[in-house]
Amino acid sequence: MSSTKFSAQDDTEFKLASGDYSAVVTRRGAALRSLQYRGRNLVVPFEPASQIPDFRGVICAPWPNRLADGRYLWNGKEIQATINEPDRQTALHGLVFERTWKATQRGQTAVTLETSISGENGYPFALDLRVIYSLGEQGLVGTVTARNPGATPIP
Image (tube, rainbow, N blue to C red; front, side, top):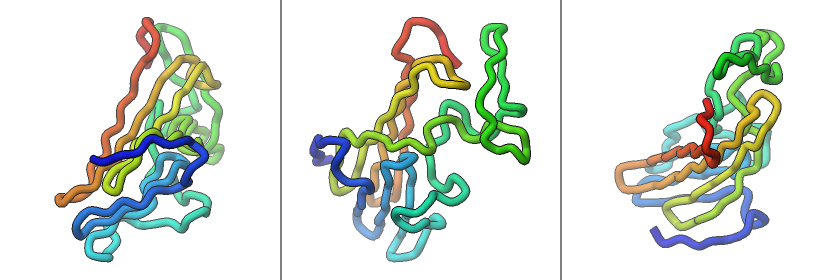
């Protein structure tokens, strides 16, 4: 991949293309906004600069899905996350889906986005996240990496 390093102030979304495939990835939520093959949608797209509907295409971390009552146990300690789905009394889809991720590499066929969590409400641990979206002749590959920057195990 030919890539360029650039600042977080650059683009808010990234258009990728390879062969008959095209994709658009946003810095907001590190979301896959669209994916097409020969102009046909392979995912339900959403409009640029709009609210991301139904958490569509976002990275859900440090937990996916829902935490019942917004709680979980780690090393015998109960941790309370913010309830962001009050109708179901759950903490939904982690903490990074609304963030503006930092783009660290970009090319015609790939983009790398990164963010970090550092002792936040509901997740009092440090965690570094990276997602690489890479488009090739066979389609899209998304690789998500979570790294614990500390010495103590974390959930």
